Amino acid sequence: MPLPSKPLTVTDLQKMKSRAERIACLTAYDAGFARVLDEAGIDIVLVGDSLGMVVQGHDTTIPVTMADMLYHTRCAARGVSRAMLMADMPFLSYTDPEVALSSAGKLLQEGGASIVKLEGNSRQADVVSRLSREGIPVCAHLGLMPQFVHKLGGYRMQGKDQASADAMRKDAALLAEAGADLLLLECVPASLAETITREVTLPVIGIGAGPGCDGQILVLHDILGITPGRTPGFAKNFLAGRRGIPEAVQAYVQAVRDGSFPSAS
Ligand code: KIV
Image (cartoon, rainbow, N blue to C red; front, side, top):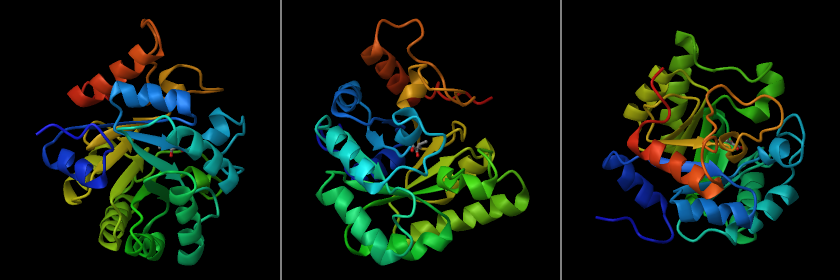
């Protein structure tokens, strides 16, 4: 059965997982790029707080405000018709369930997002469950959580030892039980990401987490080779050797769908 031409819902993504159809996701921060992604068949356009780095020129995502997120989400919303629009909850916008409800409500009502993403482990389960109870779809972000960079001591792979891998598996299960609709795993060993993807019923999107997830996401600037500073090792420049940005995005979608990106090594 073909997927609807617009707009994708969490139920559609759930069906893709059950049919083993890979979910292709990218970030965008404005209407022009969101439209290019939508037309290339991207399933989820994420207005990521990575905009703090790739658009605003900061070193971290921490300076990004709710006003910034609302502005960029509103812009991107004008560019999508089929893709699901996901917006990041910025730093300190979900410190407790009521604060989170107000922040997420703004991203949906004023920004036009249809799902929000937040970083956090099972400590955020009460936040996830509050949003879910009010009908707000949530993507829980585990593994490397860039908003925690100062606590983590840098941008490093997470879940490398047995104890932290077990804790992540437990967090994933608890967040799913709390009502999360999607899970995003960033910089996690491929074998751990594959295990979590098998263990939870909700779709799992990976970034730097190997090929065993239900879908993949990258930062748009990384696939275009225009990231300021160092590009993460797991990213790939899809513009190299292609005629333009639409063709690069189509190549990325194709590579995610056919499983050639990311490679197993
Ligand atoms: O902010 C962002 O772009 C993200 C991706 C790295 C997944 O969270």
